[in-house]
Amino acid sequence: MLAKEANIPLSHLAIHWLVAQEEVGPVIAGAHTVEQVRDNAAFMQSTSSTELLARAEAIVAKWQLN
Image 1 (cartoon, rainbow, N blue to C red):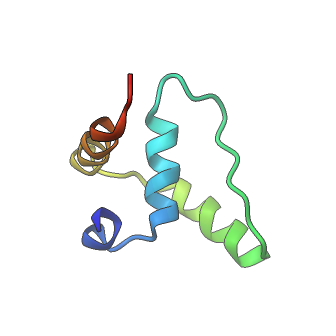
Image 2: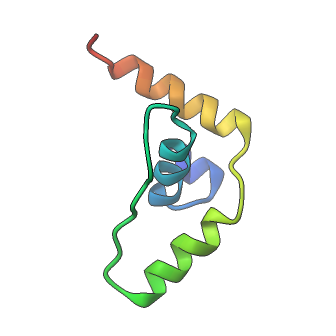
């Protein structure tokens, strides 16, 4: 729902969220086609808003089982 509200694919939101996590090293996004590779690479040149990433973090925090 969050990705839909932001009008971006869920995969793009996931990649940006992962990149923003301090404890995550390099993010390797899988792709099946050259078009997917290009799309992921182009998207990584953009930035997600701080608000969008904060909302994603709040959703993830609800499900942490620490």
